Image 1: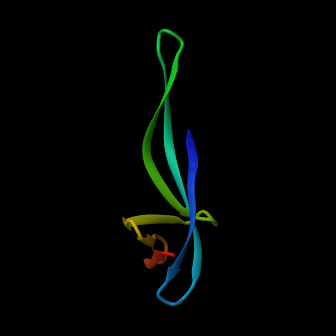
Image 2: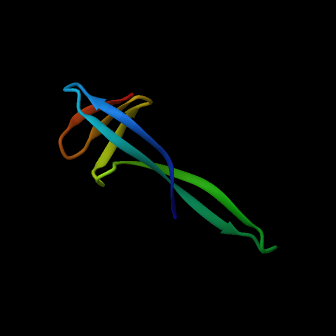
Length: 73
């Protein structure tokens, strides 16, 4: 299962504004006692239109389809 954990705006060098969504995989494990534990897994970044985004650093991302670099505002 994936969970939306963040949503923020990022800007290109040309001044275009994009909304980036951050999803994180949540892994549920059931113990013999019946207790359910959640573990957090990998994060995935996409634009609000569904286009994939690669993480470069905390404030810098690259839109996969266009190779355009955007920076968190």
